Image 1 (cartoon, rainbow, N blue to C red):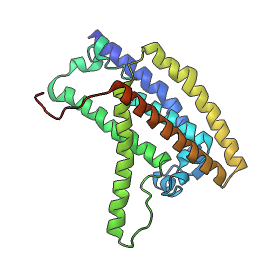
Image 2 (image 1 turned 135 degrees about the horizontal axis):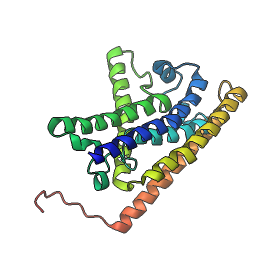
Image 3 (image 1 turned 120 degrees about the vertical axis):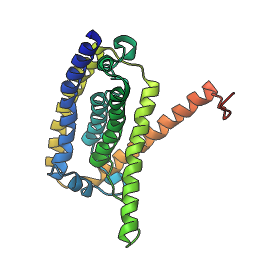
Length: 243
């Protein structure tokens, strides 16, 4: 089936291409911690947001967004869902499967969403770190699991929000975003992270606080824009299922 062949070629090109910026975005975290262990990376952070690697310095801040975008492409999520592209490839590689086999493809994609959130949470958002509010190991463990779960599923919600907001890009745009923008930016960002680690081997608190305040202000401005467009659109919600 030609649609399956085109979908498979797109998927292979997409995965091979976006592996590069995703891998390069992990290196700044490895430089800061000196380890590839997820548990050690999480322990190197704190429960407070300004102790997360997301706000450690400008280069880890950029690395987070590159990593998140690359993982969306790796997981075939909108706006990078070109391998299935229902409007042009009639679901791409899935045309050769039906029933449960076809369903498993989509279940795997939804499972990938949680993996994307979990990886970003562990590397950049403090993982399971919580304040030591009790000496009870069971309660503390449950709080850590819940914290990791909520952080991961917040990113799942963001991925779903992106899917409902952005249109699908073209194949040439997909490859251009990777090779013309994300890969060069990732290399420059990695060099900057190396210089930062040499200059501040133990971190720099003013930079952390400044990046945290910048993140807060950006989030507040974004929410204000969302509220503005919601007021202008005047959406109406109905709780009657038959209305």
